Length: 494
Image 1 (cartoon, rainbow, N blue to C red):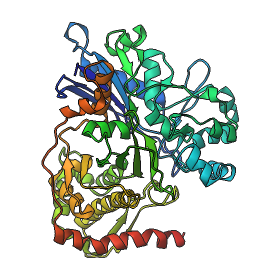
Image 2: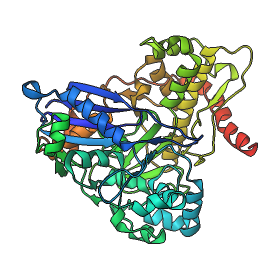
Image 3: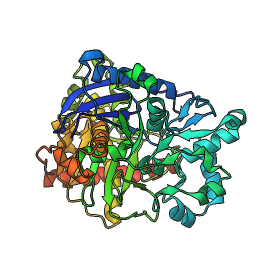
């Protein structure tokens, strides 16, 4: 592996990480991002802020001048679905509607009224959900017609950064899969879906491969970032696809659960496999001839961050605030004395497909302390991911173990908690950069350092597995049943 830079355009930050030929981290940098919430359920960011954060992160990771570290190729990763609306001059028209933005329910109903379920499964392999890109385009057309009249191109976050780095308008299949405009089975834009929605194919960029070179660093971007002009940039992938590459989940039989702002469970498949009820997503992987089934909960790490921010303010200035909360929770028994947390703070995707779902503590009493609330939040996140694992197994896909990455892999208590709730061994992957590493590995393949992605992921190190405790797994049966019963009951009461 050459020195390859992985750049991850996340929701809470932009991360730049440089890796050497053995997959070891040479340097890393992170720049924070803010999310604007103009109304409940809405979520926006300005794409220009992604680029500004990216330039700062790259400069910190790579350096500049004679002391700059060599970068042989660049891979891009980014949050899925979020809409970048550009005019004919390539200028941003309005802030991007993010993947967790729930304002497009009316547009999802419009899609469902125009396209039946069978056609959705055939054309795009997924249901109309508020977070996807197509409903956001329709929302712009319905609510901001003057802005829509200026619309010339729709990009995804990492591809907007590609445009700024290279001047090239392009995407690749794993990110395009999340637009609801992409024929996932055939890896092309869906002409049928575009026609059904009265949208021009010209709005969409060309599609290349995840390891294919799709542009090089321009002279302008070189000045802004400190990178060498002409450095190749590969297609890269969606954050979930790159995250899977970054832990080695590139072939059928591998399953990975990740805690970021959201929580995901990804299971690669050799052919596109669609849940008949479309509770989980079916997307293209960043690996040729490979797809994956994915369950998504919208607030996993975000739910824990909310708890830390709102209920542990005296810990805010402590670097180990999360560790302190975890230690408190570890002293609380399984089931948190009957307290259940529903982690639906921004709606939910899998399995409920309900943008109006909201979070709740149920069973709260005077006996409960912050430690019980923390335990309930962590258990609720694990229960939400267990929902996704159950759907994957319903589809006939084996889950022998679960690789874990992100916030859920950092603390020994949370690792054991996941093993006990899932009833599966969990395998932490010894790499904190996740999607950035996956993007860098894709870049290394594109630069010729490896023959394919399967060879590239051999550099990834796995930590020892954490096995489930049989008694603890059985003890979670009743709290999990309680969790699954609560959502329908609360929805009926809305």
